[in-house]
Image (spheres, rainbow, N blue to C red):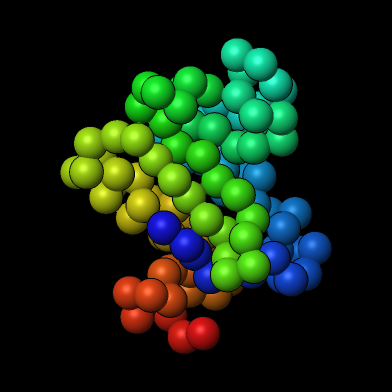
Length: 103
């Protein structure tokens, strides 16, 4: 999933992103290296990418999430981050590719 939280967004947006992350189910924090995930990458559920997990990275197209988990559980989590981010950031957060938001 790629959300319309763009890498060139102002600091006022990026300053809120860690707060959004922390409000999501099973937030673990940022990886610190080794068995605790890749340094600086946000993780949910597990730092082990062979187990159920979610990670995020900032890409030119937006905030990119990858996951290994049950599809229904993923759909609930995705709905949650979109709702929380929309409320916290003050604009509709969604996926451009799905037509949820404009480019």
